[in-house]
Image (cartoon, rainbow, N blue to C red; front, top):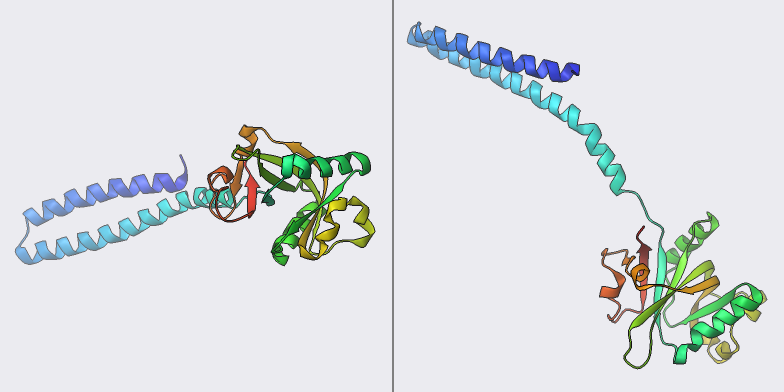
Length: 224
């Protein structure tokens, strides 16, 4: 038995013994002595209670710290974009370039990802942490959403001119409107079960529960 637990049990036994002794003295003594006896007993009781509380805190503390460390475990961050694709051409064109050249560059028109988010994604990639761009597309006029998982090589706010051959030709008229560029080296359609593993980092909600919102870009994680 741990020493601090044994001490706590011994204190409880002393508490009972002192209580019985005090009770006997009070019954056989004058009123003034009874009051003094009760006062001393209460004072001793408070001291013993404080000792026991200290022991209990020491016993619980290591478990609490371990639980806290577990909640701080950080999953990698990824980015998900809801895109439009005429007859699936966005997926096909970029997939063809990957097949031919090993990687392709996909551009996002409109508001750029924040500099901090871009930096975070690139730092993960530099540490060889698999980092993904998820492309979520609605199939047909009113069909279901499907998601493609793309392995990221780099994210930037400006296009690297030395890699312009990795950009689909139909981008040529839109360069000025593209604010974020994603270099990807693999692309594959996800199953419904794997899509349900994606969650929004800020809320923890499954991505499919918020995909119809006005937002088109999401900071996401992938549950194990």
